[in-house]
Length: 128
Image 1 (cartoon, rainbow, N blue to C red):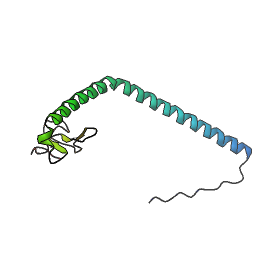
Image 2: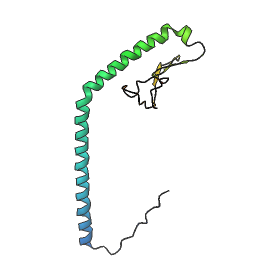
Image 3: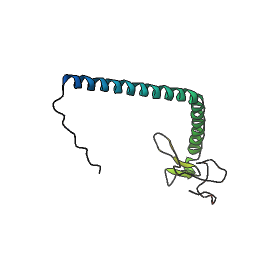
Image 4: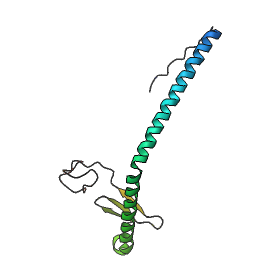
């Protein structure tokens, strides 16, 4: 656990020293606000830059989710008799009475020529 720094109590401060301290405080606060505004502006530009790609990917996820949901519903009798979950190569389908659920694998796969997260868990060329 980190030690707490002991706070030094300052006494005998003159009006001029207080004004100088306030000026220093105000200057630091203004610079901090400017830096924060710059960061927010850059973040907004980055979000705008990738908004279309994120929307495409979200649409792709929804389409794949609908396909998997249809597969699970059509094959409910044979797939989900003993368990409510089905493990697949890239994740787990959770078949519940309420909201359907997909859970992707969290591990990092270092496969030969295969992007991370695309590798099947039983592949021998995976390093992860």
